[in-house]
Image (cartoon, rainbow, N blue to C red; front, side):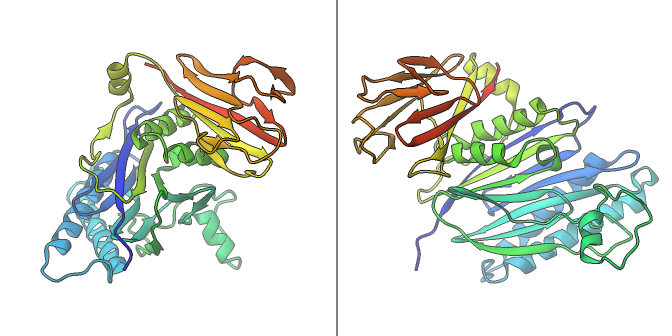
Length: 372
């Protein structure tokens, strides 16, 4: 039997440019349930729907796991469906009691951890992604009118532009719940991203892929913060919520189950936090994405962080160093040189989009800066 894998978790939610935050995240390491909720309402109640949904899901799964002899791994999909139905009923009940809450709904994207397996469940357009190097894969499909019309071409919509209209959500009275469930076998170093549409509507998927690659080496909390801030820097007008899960073979002594606050992180460090990545464009490692450490050495020697198995590379060819304002590339006395944007260089302050070439290997540099 395969050894159990554990999950390191981190979450970040940002109000952004909205007057209030209607998102909610759930990080319950004890019961192995992690989720993002994105509330909505024509009047008020979006936040209420998200919070009611979160608490109902948490409580239902906690009660089911407490029952003697119940093996969640075997019936994980039913557990998630039961939890979603409980949340749906709780929101509908609140609507019935308070007319001001009429019409409030919430999406949900959830991961249930069962040893080596995960149950991925969702309702609405909050998403779950899997980064399994070097590929980023979307595990969910938005329950939107746009996708519904693609699946039912015989249906003529009442609106010309269906846009982001949802056909399924917790608390939506006119439709059946219609949750979607997927079972996934977890592998070491997998990184899962649960997020609201405030992230996916603004941050390109290739940027998400590069940042998730960083979660394999950098504290997932810093990457979660970076992704939320990236959405705001890309002009997101919505709330932004991110949950990151990283698979490890070591028990997690202190699960990161708190909500990470950008301001608190900046206050604690009192200096900018810079995350950097290299995407390999040409050469034997083409397609890989690698997160940069404080010092990343490139060369032919096996102890280098980035090993290049080609004749052009010297033993210790070049080094990338994290500095206060970004990353610096320096040549380490190589025979054939290090090139930045096709110019041979001894030392260069890198900026986003710079191309680094060593022999046949070409890499593009990207970074995300978190201000204090």
